[in-house]
Figure (cartoon, rainbow, N blue to C red):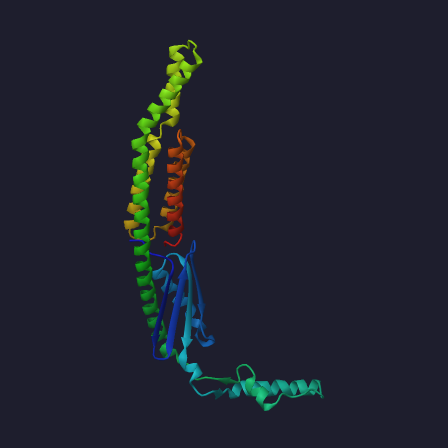
Length: 281
């Protein structure tokens, strides 16, 4: 079954919260927003994403709710380093103004919160895996709905193909009758072989049986791709191009207004399917 590339998942556990968003993209593009003291987890988390997803632009955000709740802790090491640097500046620039105590407390890195220990890395990874599972489930649900919409469009397309095939003999007969009537109106003796040649040429020009067969074949391949396991987005996109090519050929071979309108309806349906397929993994 196909899966959508558009989804969202959020999983919270104790003081941690993972949010993952994914949208359509030609390849797998993953970005992380992690607190500074968790940056070292990014390579392993990125590897984990590749086990669950094949395509899509993915943004994963780790939030620590306790950062707002915990009491601020004075980073004495950072404060001593800052004090040393300020003294050095005072030696070079005697009249330099020292920051106030309040300014020192606002200095980046001077105040912080209690950080997690390395033992909690596994907990963060497990929670991220749970978030990925939730994301995949939503992508599967969205994919199933997309497949249903595409199947409806394929049914409409099949109905138009059947209509074109049913109308074709009558259209050819009508064109033949018009040609013979035109010859009679001219009141001239034309070579019967030449008339026969013109009728054969007209029939060949208007014959779209091959295009209709290819359209039916492509529709069958689309249905197979919708039921196939794994990523099918690129294959479906290619099939939309082939369907559109055949619809354009039908339009160019049209010998009646109804045929032209049918070809236009086909192209509209194909474009609607193509828009949906852009979100398929």
